[in-house]
Amino acid sequence: MRSGLSTTLVGLVKPIVIRVSGENRYLKLRRSGLAKLRQLNKRRRKTKRRQSERNGFTLEHDVARHADLLNLLVPAMTPAQAALENFEYVADALDSRKIEWWLVEDYAGRGYRIGVREEAKSLVAAALMRPKTNVPIYVKTPQSTAVALTEVVDLCQDPAARIINVTAPKKVTETNWAFGFRYGCSIEFWTEIISDSRVVIEAPAENRAAKLMSDAEFTLEKTSTGSGRECRTPAVLNRTMLEDITFPIDAVYTWVDGADPEWIGSKRRLEADLAGDEYHPEANHEARFESKDELKYSLRSLEYFAPWFRRIYIVTSGQVPTWLDVDHPKIRMISHADIYDDADHLPTFNSNSIISRLHHIPDLSEHFIYLNDDVMLGKPVRPHDFFLPTGLAKAFPSRNHRPFGAPTAEDGPHFNLTRNIRRLLESEFGITVTHAVKHTPYPLLKSVLFEMEDRFPDAFEHTWSSRFRHHEDIVADQLYHYYAQIVGRAVATSITYRYINIRDDNYRWVLRDTLRLRNRSTMCLNDAPVDDVEPLTDEEVGDFLESYFPCRSSFES
Image (cartoon, rainbow, N blue to C red; front, side, top):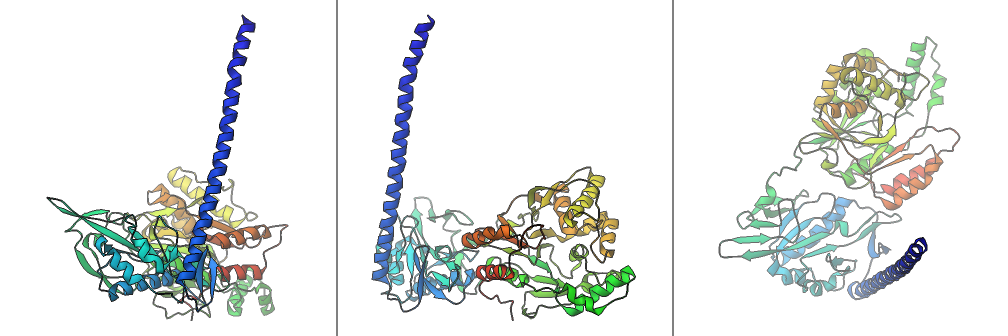
């Protein structure tokens, strides 16, 4: 009996093994075939594009190939400028032939979108059609490969082509700062559907309203783009939607020039006075260090990737960066004296104290984002990345946990800050916090900061009165991170982020990878001393900043 059962099992197992093995061989061959097919199609697309380029361009300017497109080399360019140039090129071409078009989406970190009636497709193609251009201009549909603009007529003859994207790729010389189809102008062909009872307009892609709308909602109204060009847009797209963020948002920086002799002298005098020692002016030289101008590059990142900020406040001890255009309409310089009520708290060299007074900035908006000068944006972001339309702020907790224990002068300041904040919140709410806070821009609500100040007056007063960092300090931006979640004024979420410690040469590959990919919304170039490692050189850090943010902003004089 047992022998028969064994024989039966052996007989059953054998074909199963053979069948699985056969499936594995089949899947392997199938994957291999698909890979070869993709490679073949890629080569065909590249061959077609190169042939298209030869037929479509008579180049008279320096170009370079990037992302397999010929890019016009330019000395400077920003995302908004690249998108605007593509939009103006298309809009001018349509206006020259008196073709009706409407704005679907203004510049919002990517290219403009415009709509045209489906029956005007051939007219649009003719308007865009150019003989060989002296700069590279490409066109593509979601289904097609990119080809020279001279082939737009053939492209538009495809009935399935309901969206075309036009771009003149540009690349800043000697950098990987390039602008392709992401910043192209999309032309959408909208269709009119007529039935016995109604007329419906259908868009080929979702927009801020819907793909389908009645002819009454489609009524075109006069408007203008953010760049100031007068145009028209469907009435329904002008409505305030539930998901819209309509409140103003400010940016706030704290900044100090640590190499300023006057600032150093003030700091040394206070140190000597508090210690009861005699002040020696020669001591000033010990604290001198070379600035990497992080603030300049952080402001460039705001102009490149978040032009929606209303104002930018820079809080200093009265210092002004030599390169800053203080007359820029968005810039507001704020001295410590503007935000402190008690003169005995000044001068202060305690960043915890200064950050805990930011909500006292005159005329500051209710919603604002605080940035250290070593924090920067890495790609286009929207207000929605930091706030909900309801007005709640977003919080970005780290996976790291802060250690427990009593604050001591021997521990790192960031550990003690969390310990002091933890003690406050446990005492007030019976809730323990442990996750660290990412080094990102911090979305804050002014009213909540005042609420915290009223709720924890002793903690705030102690921090304000500490002229230098103290192990019993709190700091308002981190307290806010936890407090606002507890009281329902913030929600924990995530944002793409890259931390780089420039004092640790193990981050050298991170620096290079960040520049190569350019795929993080925020980054922090922190300056945190680490034992037994070498720091990145000033030249390496400077080259990274200049390569990632190569073009001057309008904030620079």
